[in-house]
Image 1 (spheres, one colour):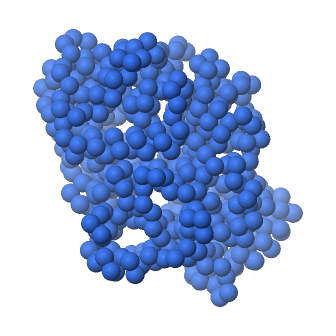
Image 2 (cartoon, rainbow, N blue to C red; image 1 turned 90 degrees about the vertical axis):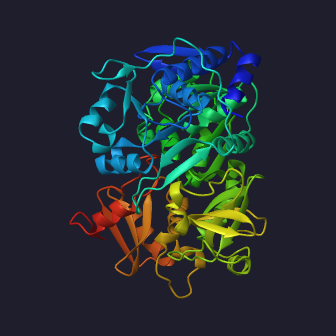
Image 3 (cartoon, rainbow, N blue to C red; image 1 turned 45 degrees about the vertical axis):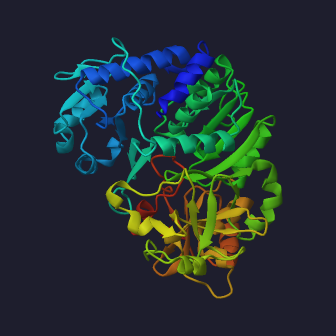
Length: 524
């Protein structure tokens, strides 16, 4: 089999249907399914002409664009592997990625090619191919010439390699096989309720592969997708109107930036948001401003996407428990996944425990612990096993992935998210068990003070609440009182809360701890 066979089927079924739409230099570019299949075959032929063979690794630094998917699909078509790594993580990170899985070629625009002069690991890559311009000593990317035959590959053949940021240790390499991506496509098609003829505004690049496999049109967001919290609402609104967009999947920060900022009718019939905590006030705003849309919060990760989904229609029923410190409702597990809550064993390897030991760790409904999952679209291990010791469990003949997230299951089997297990705070006598984790406190405060972003952290042996400056004195006084009822002993302000680079929606805890240790932090 080969993943690209799904694209070939859609090219035959919907030859004139737009597959990809993007905007470049003020102009729309549209590629139909038939054209994309032709370009994919040409791309595979071009890669072969550069001396690349089945199984070779290609490192790609290409912005989200039609060219990115030409490269990805062309490589898959030819039985090659694509490696993606974020250059923003620095030279040593990139060199380490290249050491662990040496690429045979490097593809990217001229700006990316400049990195080869400064990053030792990139200089060792034998071949270089430039997109979108000219660069000395490189071949120029093109989808023209002979069409290569589609390479049959095994289900366990690697297709896509990505790396974690390494913010909590050595970066882990997630290797997605053709079989894994096929299983993920099936899970996403079900969870995201794909319907024939839909037009999807894309901000999460990996979802494009699922759209292409399902015959949906993907409109690549006309904004800098590296910074979803600064989305260009006017440009996005214009795209939605021009291309009759019907659905959108994006991080919470993207929708926060979009709401109320565009004069165009967004026209979304379906909205899916995740990749970061989805607070109730965002779901309520989306429902208010886009009343015709079905809104769903998705819980997932690099290693398992999706895990659960939550219908925003249920947010009112969940509100009392959130306000009481129950955390963020994430809904029920998707049908393709098994989910358990284990006793929080942060810092302890569970890789080789027995079946009986695994069963003894499973927590009953209502008790907080670590979320673990298993299924065909759950990553069974990392490259060379580096990272498996901390994140995998072999039990009952299956591989379970330790998400590192804390949560609990209610009596219906619905999941509630509490934050990272590693962010657990000191116990407070008489306090609700869930309140030892950050989301329980943050969501409870935000339930009463929408749009006030806080961070609950362990600091100097205490439970501390941190928020950015600019809040009114009246709100500050009320939040201090509420936080004491939630077991918080100190309230500290910083200039602004640091957020993750990818989604602009999750607290960057290492950066926050550095801020707390600096002169910028003030106790109130």
